[in-house]
Length: 598
Image (tube, rainbow, N blue to C red):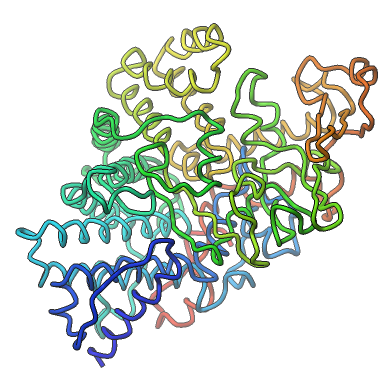
């Protein structure tokens, strides 16, 4: 049986080539004995593909986690926002059911994540036993990659399900059934693993195996360690149901900020990554250039016939057209309030938020089309129309998921340095992000920085706001709000703002009642007026636009108001998804969901 398991394991790794854009080239072997597999770099690399195969499975990251984790919050929402009666909506509105039809299967993300962990555990044990990493840098680098990928999966398990069983060794008869572990145990192991992994991994472009964003490198391992340190040192809903900081002195807030500071500053000092123009980041992502050493630090790789990034998160195409053979996009989108959180000079708004979709035309020639309401906005970071290939699959688009980018490191550095050394020391890092966001308005950057550096508290608030503006549509916000203990308050603020936006009160009082638009001569581009503070109906009506429409939240398919569907139960009482019923039933009584308000 053991031999069969390893045979299946290796073949799974080689089969997973189809879920990566770059194929492995391993020698044929007459035996698949563990000692051969994990002492031969060409074979051991198959273990990396085996782990990534678990990422790309139908109900893993591809079709479940990436679309459903992280919404609803103050920046991102499930676009078919409903309060009841829809299991997809219930994954987002803090009213998740343990038998959710989208998740309560034996092959969903929770299962696939543990499948990936088991494959990683087998490889880690094998390489440590047979890989001679002390004298074989190539095997050491493979170990570093697998340690990092396992940390990625555990990071998302904790984000999605809170305290989960800790499995850092291959499953045995004695460990078949495990209870939830305190996440602190997992965090400490991952922080140690990533520290070890960074010692084995080269920087981006230091060797041929780190010249692609699909390959794990030292910068990503360090950035992920910083991200995990901030989560470990932050607030969370614990096994007893309360929201609090860790009581473990090894995970104290001060120590975790120190780790984040160290890792981020070392990445910045390396000079191996750089900020791009804001639109350029996402054009390169959609163009699938894949080059390391720019802003993208690591991407989950999907083949052309796999992955649903634009399919679920991109600008909607109502019909097939010149850009795509699938009528998809827009499952999730920006919280409507975000359209008005950016200043007019901030170049991030028109990249992050798109107030139009594509009507599909005659099925071959699409044109931009203004949606019926504010509740149908789209993330502009993921666009069929920016790709260099036409999507031909009807079910997947194949775009990679950008898991981390350099701007995240810069803003984590700003946050950590402010906490440890104060706002003056942290200011250069926040200013890097602001300078890029306001390339034509340096005076606004100067004014902003003067206010932000007035105190530690003011600087922290500035970072909280900046991360919202910078990462809308990248699904980082919910985890950020949880670790800051701002989940309840920011969702309450968002609810109030949505009510004010619909009623045109508060800061929205002087917005025009309509938007005005026309399609330009190229037949694809739509010009819209009325989306900025200071715009007026009088100017819009006189502007030569060929059409206009009321610009409100509009009706939802749920009788409950849009803002009341944002969350049903108090968010802090259900920060995570429950462990699904199929896994409770198969746990021999070891698992439960007692901390959650179900």
